[in-house]
Length: 253
Ligand SMILES: NC(=O)c1ccc[n+]([C@@H]2O[C@H](COP(=O)([O-])OP(=O)(O)OC[C@H]3O[C@@H](n4cnc5c(N)ncnc54)[C@H](O)[C@@H]3O)[C@@H](O)[C@H]2O)c1
Image (cartoon, rainbow, N blue to C red; front, side, top):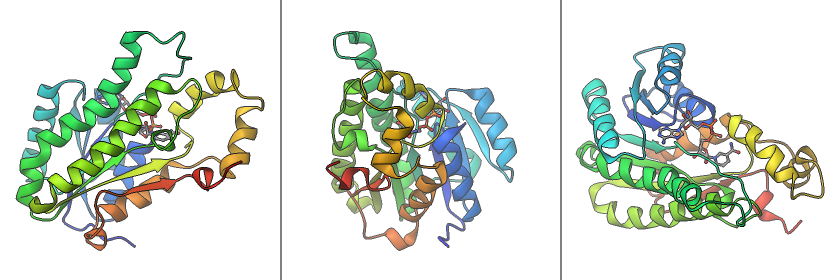
């Protein structure tokens, strides 16, 4: 099992879903965790449920001030940061003909902009660690496009190119930067995608998932890979993106 004893981690969007599972997995591996989420109540409830000295921080990743304050609070509470997981994200699922300028930019702002802002704010603390890791939540939607998901795919594609750029810029500071690219994972976000995807799919959502992935992903499927990328075993991996998708991106049909 991956050992993260003594590691201090900041997980954005950790109040629920994949972020929560990541926080739980990092704690099980021995890390101490701060959860930063715009849903303050949810973050507090999750931190309490996860136990230990898990910290909850209110943070909207659309704000550079919030990102700086969240990093400062995590450093204060944990004594530093060795791991940053940029997980906070939103989906917008609409055809291009219906998508507003505000919606397109909001999707980029939260997903790609948030990843940039929290990364930038955390660099001094991560560099001070001497051996640290950033793991970004990409998506199979960042590896190829799809109907009704143009804004989301654009934002996740941006995260993958940002991941590669940051990996090279931060190598000398001892910071690895990688991305995980889940397929459809059973969370509230996936539930919200059912209706818009069924509107353009010839088969029901569940059939589509079973055909392309074998089954729905579970948040834990993603969390284990994140824990590995956050560990010393992954020190020579940087700038990489890992599909966690039951084979979706490996197959033509
Ligand atoms: N569920 C999937 O099928 C799937 C697939 C691939 C990638 N992802 C990615 O995984 C990540 C987590 O997704 P999820 O399925 O757990 O979604 P979710 O909607 O269940 O949870 C998202 C969390 O992010 C928080 N959040 C949203 N906007 C925020 C902001 N501006 N600032 C701070 N926190 C904010 C929410 O409050 C929530 O706690 C996202 O980046 C998503 O794009 C999800």
